[in-house]
Image 1 (tube, one colour):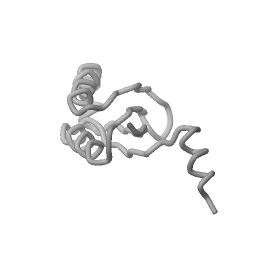
Image 2 (image 1 turned 30 degrees about the vertical axis):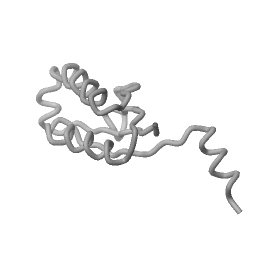
Image 3 (image 1 turned 120 degrees about the vertical axis):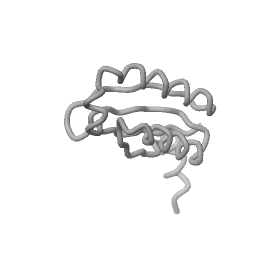
Image 4 (image 1 turned 45 degrees about the horizontal axis):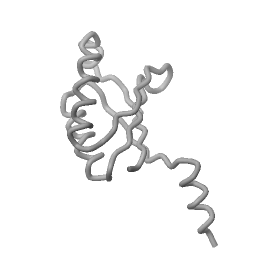
Amino acid sequence: MATYITLLRFTQKGVAEIKESAARIDEAKQAFKAMGAEFKAIYLTMGQYDMIAIADIPDDETVAKLNLSISAQGGVRGETLRAFTEEEFRKIISALP
């Protein structure tokens, strides 16, 4: 599985319903598991983004499905990044000409 990091921002709806955030995180964890993904961690952050989520997900199609289903709820908007481990990074650069 590949690792993905999602940078999240609360929408106005998400801020207005902030006390329900813990329940929404639990629902997201269940959705990830149902799609064969592993929700590894979520962090509340300060700065440009409100939260960062880290997950191992089988493929880009599953990432898209999860992102769309979570965004459709209206509480957060996110930007997802594919993250490569150090081992993967070393393999990639070793194959460079």
